[in-house]
Length: 146
Image (cartoon, rainbow, N blue to C red):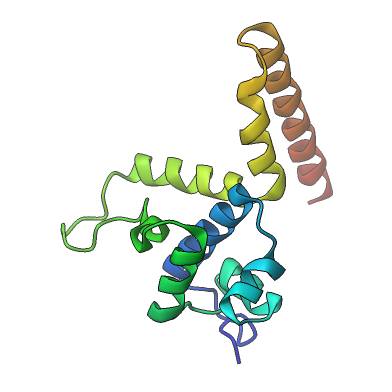
């Protein structure tokens, strides 16, 4: 039984590694099914890895890294170094989490790809203003419902 079905939350490291798998897969334009086929898994297993619901074994992470053409260390980029004795820069970690959450959504990844193609200046500012206004409206609606 997975950790999620027992009512426990996935380990933050498993969530991070799974998010990095998803981000790299999406950047390469590889479907979950294609990745699963190349690894001898079901696409559901890849989904569970990406959600952090199931832990990725060392050997499977090695195969994933090989398939997605990145070093194994790629999946741990952004995590605090366990050997330095500190949790690192909290603001930097928060920024990393925000970026990670954004890039692990299909929309976030696509926005990250196309946004730089918008010329600098007024149009970029308008897009940002639109997204801010939509987020504020969603927050107001959520607060009113609570």
